[in-house]
Length: 330
Image (cartoon, rainbow, N blue to C red; front, top):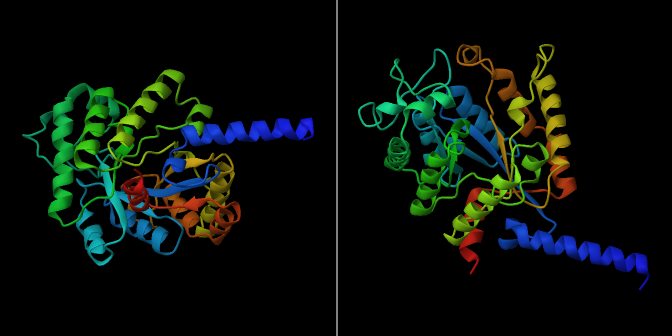
């Protein structure tokens, strides 16, 4: 064999071996080169617009999954939708914060059960530091189980769990409760425990944290749960300019951003976070993030994004499918 070709063969073989060793997609039966993503919508149940933005992004677009904020006022509507669409990939967006100025909610467990999660307005604290300063891990655990119990009482078994604003994940003592409920209830969680290419590149994760996440990943995998390799959490930072006033403007802007960012995807399982919200004049009284969220919804419904995913062979899946694949692994 030509020496140059032999070197390239060895290099390719080494890369494939590395992927097979570190890539959770491979463990679930995907090929070492497969890029597998979950296009996931946060904040469902928060408002009417959040519900219908998510529904449109899934029914008319390429998104496949969402999670629900159980303390929020528009939860009943989305559960009525789930009753009619029982195969939806819908989990819980575990919520410890009520971040908006005038539109707020309190804990599902009640003020007396979790007083450390409640501010002087009777709602959850707005910021992460406030939660960390007042709420014990035991109170967090109580609230997590209360949100899960409400979901089940309403007739839905969640497909997975994730964390609103990352509050549970970014506090080590809360994180342990998050991992504990995942294993105890056999529910997959949003936590990147594989190669974390995107997060390492942006400096979010250092080597010490990488080692900790690898260890957590082993615990979750050994408990029979699928595990994610990476987390794509950029879209909320892509802010349309004031000149982008039409749905077409927003769609083109965010579609371009998604395609550019997806060029950085590595083989493995990547959890892609977004917030899809339909337009209304009312939402502006909740949050000033309406354009960001509407642009996410528009991008998910853009044929250009679907064409890019198809052309690149990027596999869009659900957490339901990942869970079934994990069950099949001995």
